[in-house]
Length: 115
Length: 202
Length: 103
Image (cartoon, rainbow over all chains, first blue to last red; front, side):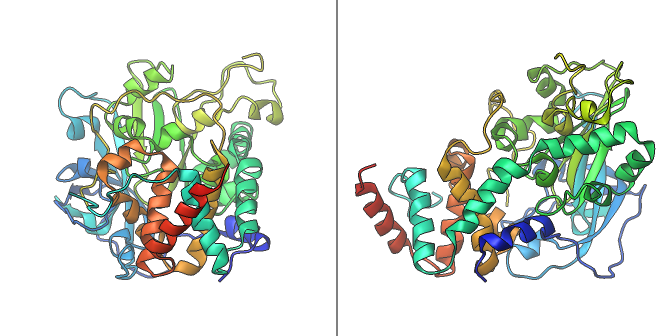
């Protein structure tokens, strides 16, 4: 396909959502306590190293999206739930961190285990 | 050593871009007018004034604010703002107890339809490294002071959701129109590294 | 991958130094690089994830020292040569030719 100037407004206003209209069961529910897996691929992932092995709480289920780890390498969308997971600052950064501040990271189903 | 083939220093980026663009045009694969249109769109047509309109509406219309917090994508689309890098939106609200800060530690994810393209600092290593681990230090660098009792909540944009902060409406703005309120909403306040302007004079 | 791009929590990277009132594009070439994403995305068959991974595979020192749209150029060259849409020889030849032009 050739992108022409005439097509630009339609493309920019439609975008390209990564949501997948598939019925995939979530492994977690809001309020679940989770442990981030020690997942260390040499290939693409959206699991940042600083949450690996850390404990969090599921705050929100955003629904089903394409999984970047496979989608980056021509291995398909592997659609799964993506969650907002809450971590305390101290859990991630140690006892010197604020005891009040927190982080939210968007975490795919495949990145976590229940605890 | 990574990239062992890279024995030559890289050419001037302007030449590098011209080289690739001209090759692709010669091969009939791209139309340079499309690139012109994209540049024009993001230089002139899409920018933080879009987000400011959304926030000013949320400040003045409680029902809209609730729609924005419940389903930001649809609420933002009511203004006609949608599309690339804003397909799945989340708006998070600042309160006297909670201050939100948005980052993409892994790259540069940013809500283009409401804020335009991200500034260099947002995409660079220092902000990406420190926003998650030292948010108060980062806010200090931006001149934002928060009470010790405020919870700072940092949102790392690791997936395809895109985040916007709904700043607190400044005190003493009860008499202002929606258009006047829009002028107080800064881009930095919608990322979380700034507060809205206090008055038209500032 | 545990690449240089995975920056959350790192120390020693210096001050943020925000530029006040910065332009959307700091030079025309940045705008062209920006536009090349959509223009190539529609025919080359890569995903946004693959594009990001191409950037993650940059030389780590170069990643930290180069500007943002230079990252995009590295990714385009990586993805398009991998797919045989352009060759490294074609790119080098074109760069050499353009470098000779008086500007």
